Length: 296
Image 1 (tube, rainbow, N blue to C red):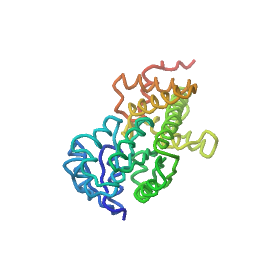
Image 2: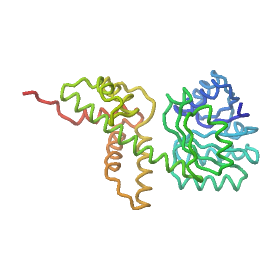
Image 3: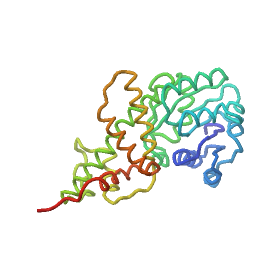
Image 4: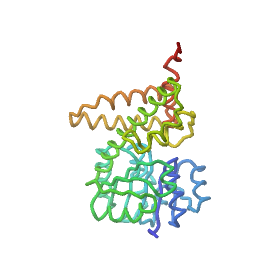
């Protein structure tokens, strides 16, 4: 038991985190602007709160699962925000994916308000949250990270303290570079396999354990081949994260030509109306733009 917890944001990722906390017996109050998302967690055992402030009232830790620095700021410091209801010393665990500079600014404001802050972006998506196997990269003071671990151990199997506040978010951007390039590479390889008449859904087994193997290959090549577009993430969120990585690259004079190209493919699909779709919809880039092969 981790004490009373609050969750702000019950979307695809926040909902999965909340459901896992309920399944492991953690007392949870939840707030989201969408009442249907709140209702889904209430049915799993959570308590609904009418505002972020009320969700945070009496909570030992407040988990944020939101989509941008602006939304995080509003949820914490806006009217009826977390800072209004939380007691001094309450720990904020931000599991959103936002840029490191914004995280440092938000953490400084939280500290001035008597609140502790740990950034804890994640990898693994909703499927891993459901099984308690998320990978988390944390930024914050040692004592605050130790408190966060007591909560996060219910949803994660790999938790690494990367450094001070913001270090977790910087690590997540690096994670997203690797994931974005891998998603695109596997989609491209699937298109090549199909054009060559190879059964793409058999390739993961053929390459299992080799250097080309990866979790994305094993999960996504069969989905690409089947055009299985069920939603576990969003293409436009990858645009946001890759743009964040490119901004960090510019600030450090780091050339990233492949990441730039990957971001533009995701941006084109978002512009074409696929931003809310899962990464599996990357196949639309190939099926929409590549001509059918002519077999001689």
